[in-house]
Image (cartoon, rainbow, N blue to C red; front, side):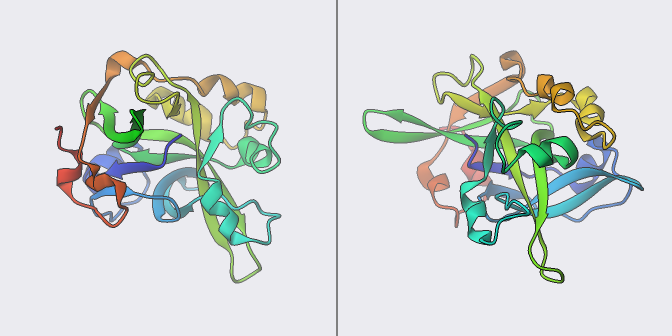
Length: 219
């Protein structure tokens, strides 16, 4: 699964990486947690737009916004069939912007946090889905991050990992005219382990209230 991540890159680096049509204002964040706002990128009539939404997808048909806290991830193997996600997979795909994520390794009854990022530390995107729900005038926009089987780097840490999209695939994932699940499902695969690094970090990251650069320091 993916339950915490980071985004500390400059607004300029993010705008360039995702070919955004307008400048953005973001602060560095080192411990992004479920139900918090996250930065997403969508295809709009004006081009690619950056939009902040709440992490934890609330289906449009749900009358209980709190369900979002349990919908932070969608499994790639079942996302096309699950009622909560299948409509969004067809027509509400997005990029969730990040530059690293945390995962906890279970060993000897304890959980040891690891930080995982790309080898060159650049900004990247998780494959995401977004949804709009709620009564007119009180609508909220939410998202989920799609996960897949762990690659060789992640296997010793956890059996799952978030889907990281290659930059050349952003266009296909965001394409609003492509509404066939079978056309986008092949993009939901484990990222190349040779392009990633993972290392243990402080247990301070266990608390969502902690948000400082030291959290990503290797032990």
